[in-house]
Amino acid sequence: RGLVALRGADVREGERQALLKDAHGHFSAVHRALPGEYAAKLALAYCAEQVGPGAGPSAYELFRAVHARNPSHVGAALGLARSALARG
Image (cartoon, rainbow, N blue to C red; front, side, top):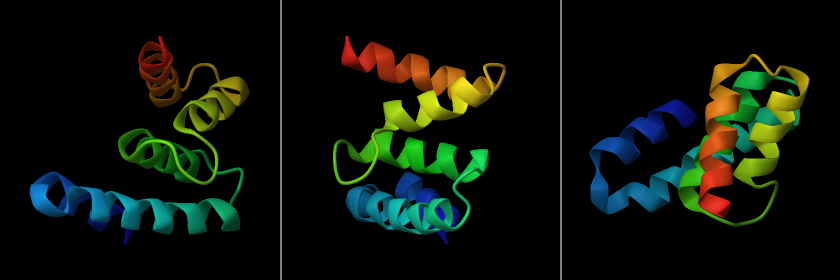
């Protein structure tokens, strides 16, 4: 459901924020159920990056958590770099 909401956010510009928040909710539930899973953490980080500050961990914190455990994970490294650039 989170992936479907993300795809909808790419296609339906007018509903983008609502769909991103919906995807964030689905990925957050998966992250709570499987806290050590990289895929759920990265998906949640991407949604947090797109939605902006809110409840829960920031995109930077999530990307950093994955990168700290596996520095060779390219998706985490790129997300961490985007987050660092956005933070200045």
